[in-house]
Amino acid sequence: MYIKEILEKYKDKKVRLYLDMDGTIVDYDFGNPDNYDTKRPLMERINKLKEIIKLFDNVELYILTICHKEKNVLEKNIWLDKYIPEIKKDNRIIIIRDVNGSKSSGDKKRDYFNNLNTSDTIVFIDDDPRILKAVKNDNKNNVIIYKDSVLSD
Ligand SMILES: [Mg+2]
Image 1 (cartoon, rainbow, N blue to C red):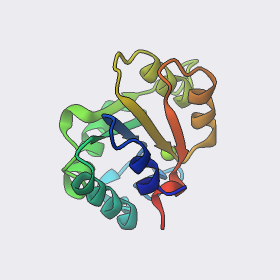
Image 2: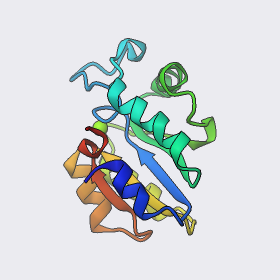
Image 3: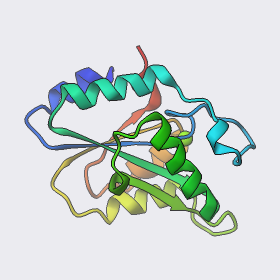
């Protein structure tokens, strides 16, 4: 299904649209977590999101992304300021994950959603099936999940 059709269904609701970054709005550069500013933006998708901001007053955009180091938080923010500054600073959830820790990225994102206290409709878009599965399997806030391809024409 296509993102605009999905959002059309929730027009009478307050919607939080959560977006992953790597592989969803940023070209996934395997094994290169550094030099974030040089990462290629997926412009077709970013332009679609900018269109959504204009078309849907009831939809608020959020980022939900994982990184490994403190410095990556800053780099991801710089990237967002450059390509999609429309997403407010407060709406950028950038979680640092200890690579040696027991929690996977999927666990971290699921925990974030399960700790949310909101009555808003939550839509979450990610490119990683393991993450989508983790959120789907223990879903206390009725998060509506979609693969990143919903953003493409
Ligand atoms: Mg991803």
